[in-house]
Image 1 (cartoon, rainbow, N blue to C red):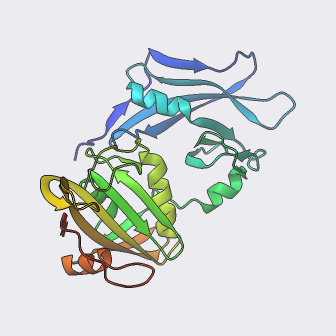
Image 2 (image 1 turned 90 degrees about the vertical axis):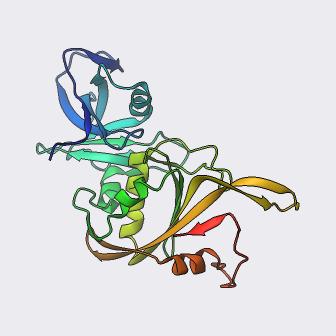
Length: 284
């Protein structure tokens, strides 16, 4: 079967961001970046790193991208903070890690969120807690593939201790939660890789996870709002799933029946009391 992914590879012409000039020996790495804008788009990124003088830390000197890289991806790649680690610098602190690449010569390349006022954690401690993504196996339904065809909508993943909400855009890309739950307007900013990592971490942290997806339809219906005014709103399709952790990196996913979805969606999670079912919702 032909690979359906769209690859952007480094060629003779590249886009280069130089951070500083140097005349030292450097290390060069090539990594595949998964686009936040199309989940089947892969961009080859070239990283040049130089060891700091009298230091075990590596500094990023240059980032190279294919000349035809889409502008949205250029912005994402350059807005992230890139790091190179070796065995002597694994305890260096950095912002939350989004993705990593491990090389046979003992080097790691990591892409991180931009720094904030939050306390940073050593790289070694972060990767120790990151679930393996490459070896994920699904028994029954492949949840990730199913979620990608349910957009535009909002996905809520819940365990006993954590909650993760994110948008599913119409093209299947995962984004920060911003959709208005009633109108389906104001989609969030694409962050496919970041949210995949967070979802994977959530699933691996609990024996069972509940998933509810609110998909926005093109069909509309007239309802009364809280002020008893008649308004036209989008119909929402609600679907539910349960994910059970079978083993390390192995998950069993089951789709809830419409009756089960109705019960979950219309029950107060705190009090257990039944809620009044909204008229603009359909259960699947």
